[in-house]
Image 1 (cartoon, rainbow, N blue to C red):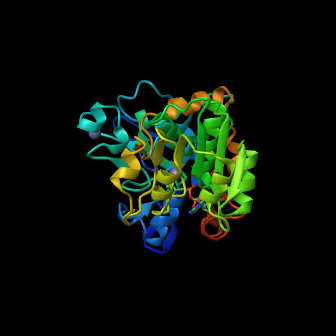
Image 2 (tube, helix red, strand yellow; image 1 turned 90 degrees about the horizontal axis):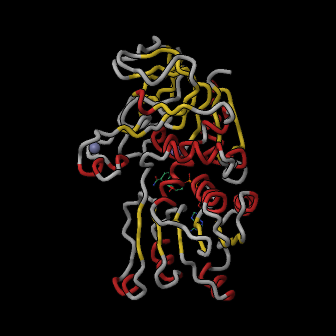
Length: 339
Ligand code: NAI
Ligand code: MN
Ligand code: ZN
């Protein structure tokens, strides 16, 4: 079988190997489709501090169970499954409070352990979630990116009356937007980005108001309309944004961060306490696969609106380069491993 392996930063090979056998508690998945994410590109380019090489990348993947390990009783051959990349210990403090996504011995498929850019992948049976027949393959492969949005929105109880502001109309901003509109029925969702083409995608995903902040500052635009957001999600993640978000927020607003920059942000206690703001962060997903599968079954979200390209996996280098260089035309880029 073939796997996409990052040997070391900037060296990607499509490697031939033997098909792995599932161990106890594991299943083997014949991969159909996988999605390219920013973190795959970061591992490829050597910019992910958690990555170890060589590594089979890919943490957004979907396929069919074709072998079952010892002791697995709740899965069967032929089931269509999408894979939760978060592997946790189940007994540390974060696991005990429902946050396996920050388990003290967290393992993420495609980052710490070989992932899904391969013809076959062996995963813990508990990480394979059965997909209903009514959900298409292309929707099933998009469950993982929507679990990030489920985690973000799950932190803050969005209300219909919220005035939500999302920074960034990339995959993360758009999944969050679809969740706020389709699942929580938030009436006003504003999306800000610097790229008009991405803002057009946000409009198609249900944004009520799109703002390009490349020429005029967001603060000025919002002030003109007298708008103070009550819920802000930073899905652009430049380190300067937190300070701006705190300034723009309504008193009593909630702000969710999802960035990993190590650069300091200049914020004061008064700017937060003066408005009693609540600051949240969100990493990966905590048991959100069943949540998003339910959203799909109920037709509350539409992943197709994010998918701009699909390539055969043999063209993975072209696919990643396009994904990296053309943010105007690219959002989610998929790789096909088998029909
Ligand atoms: P992306 O790069 O495709 O999208 C970011 C968007 O933000 C771009 O369209 C860009 O034009 C826009 N942007 C950048 N600076 C801006 C600014 N100052 N004002 C307005 N718009 C701005 O990235 P993607 O995949 O959507 O991910 C977004 C961020 O979320 C990344 O930083 C990524 O590391 C992070 N992330 C966090 C996860 C988590 O679990 N916490 C999971 C996945 C991604
Ligand atoms: Mn991802
Ligand atoms: Zn744990």
